[in-house]
Figure 1 (cartoon, rainbow, N blue to C red):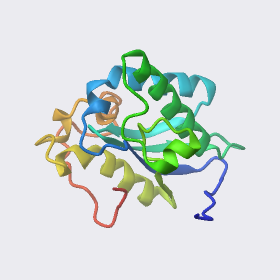
Figure 2 (cartoon, rainbow, N blue to C red; figure 1 turned 180 degrees about the horizontal axis):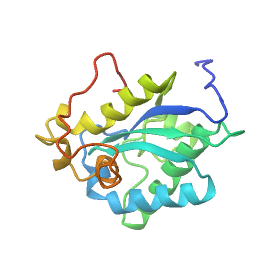
Figure 3 (cartoon, helix red, strand yellow; figure 1 turned 30 degrees about the vertical axis):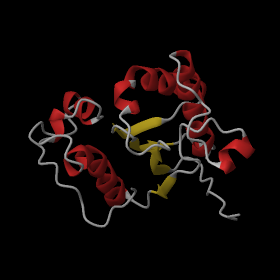
Length: 179
């Protein structure tokens, strides 16, 4: 049993990777409307600033900035995962398929990997690198040839808001991990 304790730094920015248990599925993009609804409900209950987000077939990356006096990003991730899981049950997803013994013991539905990867953003350069990582990730995975060709990315919002040029190259910074 791991003794890792996630940091709870109020008002900080954090980069996270959240994966489905079945890393070969396209469940997140196939049911992206259900994922968006789960995220929207989580944001209503627990507001935060979304700096970047990209949804891939079996995992997602995002950069969030938490409100001051609030370090609860793990609670938000749990709420988002739970809402999406409940939504998938509505369309007949069977929560008892492919559950590991530890998931059975804990009552986990089995849709998501139990853990997620997080990195606390250190400074503006680190923030910019992780935002670019999110934008460029579909190209890195061979899902698109250009970042703007991938429909499930916050780069489209950022282009509309003038935060990035539509011709952004999609170059991912070196030394940024998360998968």
